Image (cartoon, rainbow, N blue to C red):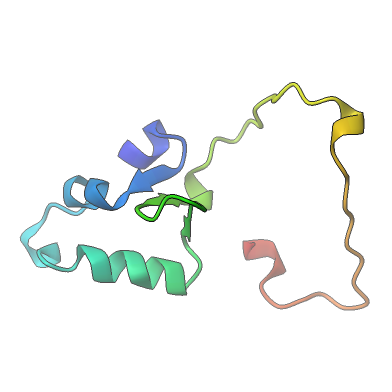
Length: 88
């Protein structure tokens, strides 16, 4: 619930509250590392202890107020379907 409330973001210290059971004691750093290795979460650039959990991002996209001329649209076309595309 904490990660959903924080719109998919969590800090390393939040894991102490998220994983409170005795069975997780002393494993918080290891569990976050496993989540990174399996690409379940990603570190926020420039913030060593902050992560994004894409599965818990809000469903509605936020409006940032950018003008269309200010950004570049990129479209990828593949001759095959890359493995893991839908999970990314």
